[in-house]
Length: 534
Image 1: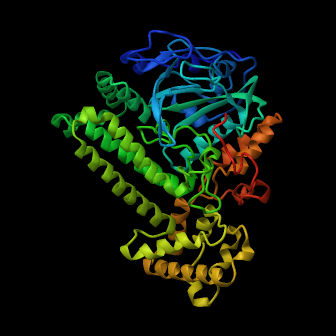
Image 2: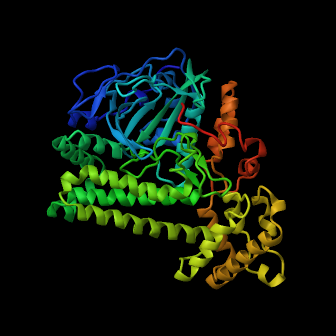
């Protein structure tokens, strides 16, 4: 198929590379850089690109049609084989704390920004992940494999449709080449199909960009980069009171704290565990970024982490995500301290993050439980809910979804409220004796509170179902899609993509995608164990 006008007519306005200093050396040779934010580097051409999937909603963001996405030019461009006029490929330099330890220069080791497109809904940066080595690849090859690329493509879009702030995914393409990976770092590398994902976001600016400049003592460049970031992504601040008062760096940091609090509250609402919340994986726009060893909290275990590298310390476990976010913000505050000049205002903003997160969390929990708002008297109800969910393996998604169907009328009939919830338990035989009584006692207290709320049943159910998804990208579903794709069949990727576009809706005929994790997935690699290997 010949190239179509929409793809060739993409309007690039590469503000990042136009306004900020570049590394004077080009190419992918590994190096430390100073006095620059990025290095120009081209994607590595691949042997036989094949488009597996694309997201039409993301294509529309940048002004492309379905016909554009079906063209040969599309797969050539978004596999890295062709650079369009106006693109300015580059990899950015940043540092970061990994698992709590400063790691020095990191950077886009396998991500190459193609450029910034001015689309129908504003500026979007196009980034290829897995398109070859960059100066920041260190000892790695800069490539990505199919399994991690399927997971990133599906989860980026699933999170968007769940209402969680996230980067997006435009396309998923095979490269026609093999990539050697040791999936569990156990000394058994094996070849896997290579793939490239095109990621899309207003910007990919990370906490680590600021940390790297601060660590190198490049205060003038730090100030210039913050000015650029505010003008590009926080322009509303330039027209506010902070601009007149000279407090723009602090106003910016306060807003980053708020964005981050909202993002993490959404993670907690849907049961998402990022798995690798290093500071270099934190977006200043409060977007979920870098879908690596993530997971969905199926069994409600607040201490669960999907990341094999984090198995001992569990730093990035589900319940610890808000605290890690605050710690990461502290590192960002340290980085911009030279621009603010005082520690106290930054410390106050960090304290305000905790209050902001709790405000979002309370609103989120109220919505999940069907309450207009939470009262102080609900604290005990919430504490006991957290406890009963851990009495036996309880599927978080199924539990909350079923809770919406319980009626306060059950209090009058003498029935055990837990009976309709039994499909949410992985070991229903364990819901007996004292456990059963304790769960029933909580459910009765909850239904009494619901009766006091006085909302009509249908209104309450609709409200709860809008906060509690029926469909999430369970790890075993992603793994089944990967297995089929590796065998040459991308149909399950497409079916999951379609189901996850409407995660809160009842979808007749798609109920199998809402089932709890099967026993075979309990210990299988890719379902319960994931690594950073990709």
